[in-house]
Length: 437
Ligand code: PHB
Image 1 (cartoon, rainbow, N blue to C red):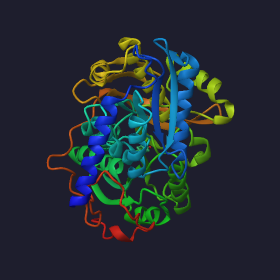
Image 2 (spheres, rainbow, N blue to C red):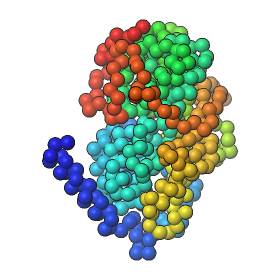
Image 3 (cartoon, rainbow, N blue to C red):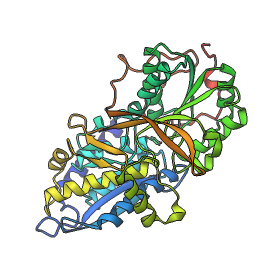
Image 4 (spheres, rainbow, N blue to C red):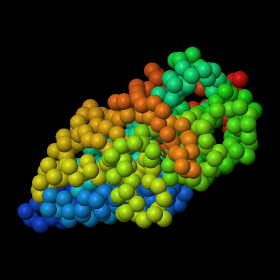
């Protein structure tokens, strides 16, 4: 770090710690307690606004069902717009929420760059930070005050690599978004698939923002794999990938689609249409999950958000569960000021039955342990659904390959960063040429 940059960072850190320790906590009435403030950072505008909408839908559902008061404290939700994969904006917002608003919890975080950038603020400001989606594995290691209620990409990708190797698939090409969760998905899938004897014949990475998938789809078709494994962030990009695959005739070429549930997000499935039929994915939540908790959640979601909001997705469920986690902590700590260390002790080992199935917060890592399901897209009563075929209970995040990411075929150069590239490459398959076929 240059001298002035170091000084600026040091001054900010001192100002932050000072402001937090001298100031009163949210809504402090002098007796401790008062309003409970939740500072929610989400991409409310821009290309990832779908992510924010699903998370807001989950928060709204929880509060409509459980009320806007907990332990006698009125819950105030302060939304802030990160505008997308802009770490600096998220960091500034986290700082404002902690220092000026004196929030009790930082939460939201649909995107990895938002979460990574805010992590030091949670540490310096001693504020619990509750992740509602951001899914790069390393996030919880970035502050002792982070807990995650969503998923990690290795957690859902490794079982799929293993399943593919055991189910007669020999050669696979991978396509992932070129930032943290994509790198994690690619590494975990490749590690499991190759350990089971499979071969990776091509690996491509698409720009995380505003990608164009036609060239990638063509390149995958030209590589003639048995299957393609895909991770892209849920929302607009899942629809775009599926459209390009359809236009390039991936299915007609005999290439099976394997992916994490992000690509076949329940909220987007009707828009994707029949092109999704038969696709195999692994994920932790499906609208089609058959349980009383999920039925109640789906009814409550519709009641809180209206039929026009459409179906919730995995992000809505994680937000709903994160709210349950926050309410439990506040109930345990009573009306007093939220002590971050005590809050984290309560989060550690917390377990309950979510609409997705049983979940637990690993006391060691503060990350989620949950059942991962293998699903197939089928039509039920004329509607497309991710129908569960197999369950992998108690899945933790698997350890990374020794020495980092596994070897990739020539052309798929690894960047190894959880942050998206500063200047997103143009949507072309060119940069990663030379498949190792
Ligand atoms: C992330 O940025 O961590 C992220 C975003 C969307 C997803 C999954 C992960 O569907």
